[in-house]
Length: 417
Image 1 (spheres, rainbow, N blue to C red):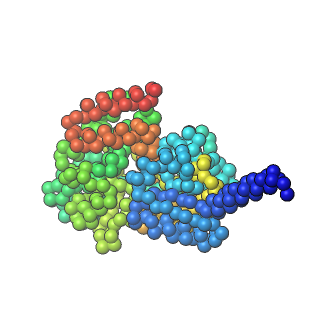
Image 2: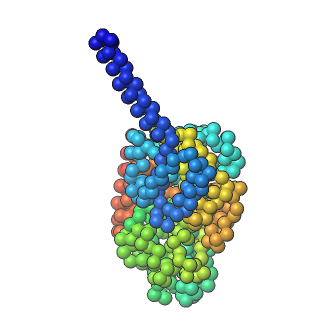
């Protein structure tokens, strides 16, 4: 064999070895299903139970799940999707999902909706899963929002029933404060918990149509109707109806206020029921945000949690298998039950938990529409600035006009680029 031929064969052998390595690597990647999920500590076991069931049903899939805390997850999400994402990610519906769909970073799941019967089973949340006529999300549980409250503290303060109107709510706050209990707990260090207050005050004062226009950047923050919302909120702060130093507490540190009887109420999603210990659960009730203007139809926040497949995912075949598995009525119901949420699949059994039953009825009977939540209905940049402004307002309500003027300048910059 001459030297040239030998060198040519050597080069071909080396190239073949490289190609073999690439194919082996690709095959390994294809056989691994990487999943990232956002989870607080008490949610992981519910996720893991569902993943274990999927693994049992699909033993050929090498499933690798990474759990990440909620606030860290929000920060890292954009980077994953744009560079080297996992195959499946947990996320939120509405604008949160549309933001990435608009940028071409999500896999179109419209065919999966049709093939798997999701259009019928998830009819109530299809709109929130859709961007420009295509579905990009596989819905999981969703939350009803309302007031968790301690029945025994209400009785002690002389509050005879759940407040149905704003005047009754203010009267209850006054009585609770006089009894030596903080009327309302709020985890204001997590700015989104303040956003729940803005959402409900706006939905009850101005209605869902106005609220969605505001979320879309169509209404100035200097509009008198927006100021009316903040003015109603200011009354609660000025009268010291919230816990002291609320800006120093996040959601994970706020539960003891209700559990230990230091606060009587908290506006939160039904998922929070999973944090309530068994010993105080019999004394814990749940009621909808009261009516402020009887002429305004009652609208509710009902944010939907979802699973997404990134456009750059490596193992889309197994990713679709996982989504189809998770969307089954019984799995959807199991996840919702474990999280203290409501199943979004209409074939799932109605929840048995007392608080979840109330939440189910709140969403089922709403006449004014269902919003996704402040930072899920609004473009991310504006939502971030809006929630930061809420913390500034909460810290010093006397700066209301300055806060609204700054928000209006931000709105003009973001929506009139």
